[in-house]
Length: 115
Length: 113
Image 1: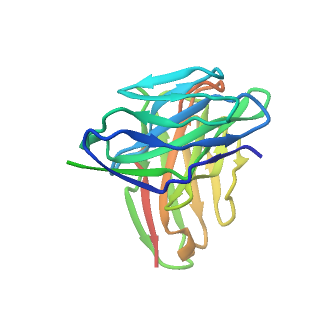
Image 2: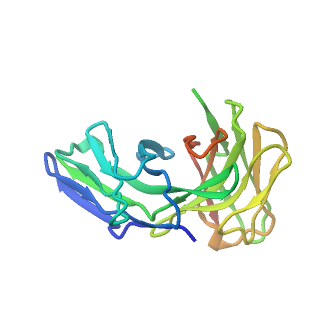
């Protein structure tokens, strides 16, 4: 079945550092890919989404490129702030059958940014 | 803006106890989902529903039942709770269509002792 792999369980950075969170996926289709962010004490919320292969999604200074060749959807940000500290989930949309779908989430990467 | 409300916020029960987690969404979304979140496993789908009366089995359904009584309300039932079900539970909803976003609730933290 479809799967999403995030190997980095935790990332610790200082403010203004460059952020890179690795995400790879496995599927037989060309899915929509997403990044969700979960701040402490809250549910996950959509950060960015890309529906077309080889396109880039950009939101709040974060960006991710849907790379069909390497089946990757890495998340990047040029300069992190302490307020970016959160858990980041990569996900893909799995088509269950015609008209029905569900998300498949990665294990999540906890980002801690030190001021 | 879509809202998903979960209750209770926190719950403690004993092994073998009976627990019901509630979820209500107010944006007339068709789809609703129950996830559990555990360190190292991310978000794992327990059960989901395409509409009132409809139930689908997720990826980790053992030990859980679910009921979708109305379009707004989706319940997760643990009839014989076990310590392995100690977790953070999230409900989510979405509209029809593969490009519709999930809206998550704030979660219910369950401790089974």
